[in-house]
Image 1 (cartoon, helix red, strand yellow):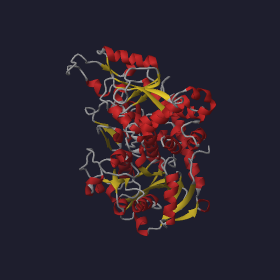
Image 2 (cartoon, chains in turn cyan, brown):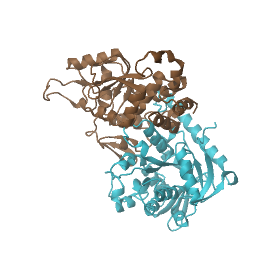
Image 3 (cartoon, helix red, strand yellow):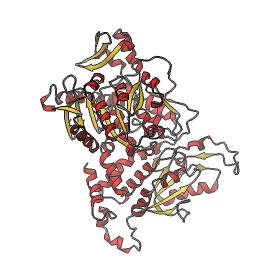
Image 4 (cartoon, rainbow over the protein chains, first blue to last red):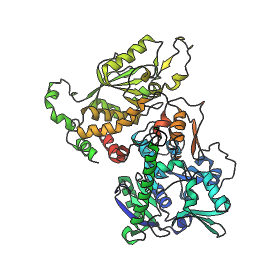
Length: 308
Length: 287
């Protein structure tokens, strides 16, 4: 195929040099470190990240609260939030494995939150949304030029909150509030408990809980981020980082110069770029087949194809 | 990237006012008294709209002056130009819906169609009716003006720019692309066509509201919960609940911004993957 990894200027395996930060991080702490550095340097004046209901309760001025059961305790439910400090970043670090509509804050970030230089982290589809909003700013007045750093994360598929609830509480038989970390890797869905227990589910179990909208997505490694990152391809505790745009290149170079990351060449690490390419191709091939099947879904009737 | 190299070369050239296409037909430019030969002509028809679209156009500030200076000859426009009567133009923007009880409005929209090569419905009212969809007449000082239609119900429209108000940046991008479409080189025309195609396809339907998100995105199994619709809504009628949009339909003004901004309503890889170069080129064109 060839285009499965998108355009990029460089790819490298990296991890944060901040040991404290790494304790909160999902893998190499790339997103948190990058935003912390960008905040320090004034490259961004705030970042839209996936925080939690606990964070939202403590920092109501950093989120837009919707009316969906907000008083209910819902561990691991992501709430998009605008963070301005490293402490807030750390409170929001880590992957939640369910939908955080980060783009929902993109316009308000420039309004009530008063940001001129926005950082945003998101899945590949959210990066697509951000770029469409820059090129076709139909409902996004004065937003496009304020996006100072968009960091994309690798994504095979996402889950609704209720799916994660079902996977963790029904399949893994753990209470969500006792979960310390969730992870997808080595062909399994891993749930780590706070007491040290570990449950692994075969990915096959998780498939029926995936968000349907993910099955038409043709982007695995966030081709449209300024920088995109994910654990796949790098050793445990490290992340694979693609530097894609001019903005990404400049921010990454500054961060490297400031010693924010330690790196290894991608060719030297296992499993390396080969695995990233393989998984990207798997996702794209599978979802192209879904799009193809949608064309003949009914009897002489197609389902809608969003791609022009 | 191939599409853009010429567009960029033009901007980097010593004579930014003269795009590459000018060189191929210098004879025409000499005949003109004013150096406007390669500008496109633009008209602006104002029907039942609140002037918000006009303000959005003007909110390009210096960008608007550059547009008028280098690319666009504004032939007529209420509010911003002396000439107000409809003339023959390359592109006309239409703001507002048509009140079919108002003879003048009906005549104007027809005349606009007859005299324009490209008609752009600017803003929610012209595209979809927007809040004029809620009119039942009885207002002063024309109580009998009660029936309003999006312009696409009376004439063929070529391009939609939805939203209430449409954004200055979107108007700017469409204006630059319209210029490239009419005056550019082959590559520039291809780029402009690719950029404008989704906005042309939008004209197939004259109805849009939050319901479009339900019927065309969620019901079709395409929503992935990015939140774009909630950000795009000008009246905050959309919230994201458990990662999916929840529309307060009584607040919805039917501007169509949520649906057209949604990355799963339409998405062109050819265009969006070149976002960096296109954005740079548009900014450079307006320097």
